[in-house]
Amino acid sequence: MVQLNGLTTCALCYKVAAAYMKRILEFAMAMICLAVTLLLSGCTTERVVLEPKPVPNSTVIDAKVHQLLAMDPQLKGVDIKVNTFQGHVMLDGVVNTDAQREQATKLAWGVAGVVGVENNLLLQSEKKR
Image (cartoon, rainbow, N blue to C red; front, side, top):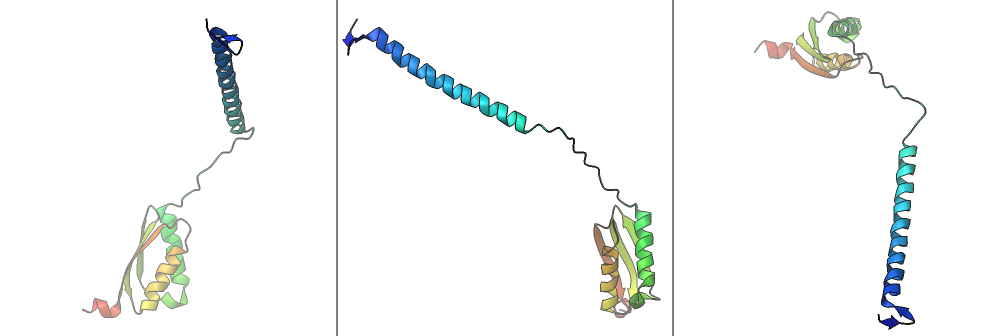
């Protein structure tokens, strides 16, 4: 055995190994504490239930859009056909002005459950061509 500062090589190896083991145990304890903290912080005593919003069916959307179009003074007397599928409203017909076309789109977007509006309205001048 070799002596170094009064310690034999075996004792020195033991002290070095003990120091490394202590560091490894400290690190392991820190990781365990972190894991427990993360697990417990994710726990909650209240359950949050997300309920989907009811989506109006196509018939309801059609009726509401028709009602808004009929009540609008700018669109009175204009025949606009409304067809809805999965919240997408399609407007078909002939209007006199571009303002009427824009107003019909705006009114359709105002109905609950509408996710898209396809405006196929033609101006009277376009139809004559």
